Length: 364
Image (cartoon, rainbow, N blue to C red):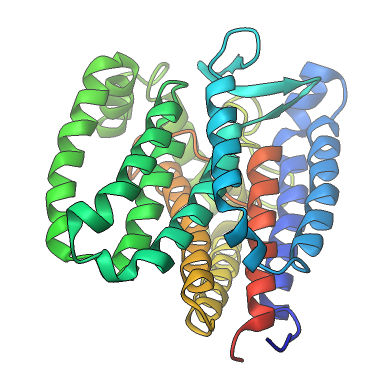
């Protein structure tokens, strides 16, 4: 196949988001980092290291023929499964924020669930490209991939990490929908999913606390509703142009660790509606270019792979934004390219690298 140049618009949009994210991580974390570590650049330096690694990986991956992932799919998924099992073993996996979902490496942490997100997308893309003719038969064509999906979902829920688990499930279901699975299947699965979510909430009371705080955060303003209330207090005063860079009030020990899940709240407070429009515009640009790449591919594997990766990133983005503005309960999901966090950033940039490689072979 003839190689084209990588998609320049996608590349530039991602780089701009990442660099803006680094600036906002400094703004959001400097006061907390100075108080806790006596170094206001603590989080910025760590994120900058991951950005450098991520850019190298993204450019490197963009030069690797995507068909190689097709050939190594089973190995990739097996490694992801082993990592998800290993992280659950006491002494190997470490606990952070109540979840045993990390491998601790010095002051850094790696989440195997982030790698599983990408590994399962690759596996599903291969499965759908090889079994497209069987997808009308739910038992023969769809059930096998669901068994793999819910095995990974189950391992992630043992950590537990409900937010990441839901991103994976919704992403794979979106790929099945694109592949042409009958709409009745999704209606039935949706009903089962509602029952499953109720059960998951029932067996873990803290999830019910999150639901309660979501419905009425002011019922427990210093407890379960604290984060949502402080997030809304940050967004509210932003106005059209915001309070100005570095002038956020909520980052001053009100909004807990604002450099992670709630960084969008600080962006809204400091840059107002203008900042929100610019950030959302960049995400929409990434979505548009990703879908265009997927539609212009020359084979089913790359089409499903491109759709799966761009859907996964955008589903995570939407979930984070919905949490920040109080539309859904707190899930612990980061905002791609902007939030502090090495694992999420690296996987997002590797995914973009794969998309860029697919764009080399697409019909322009």
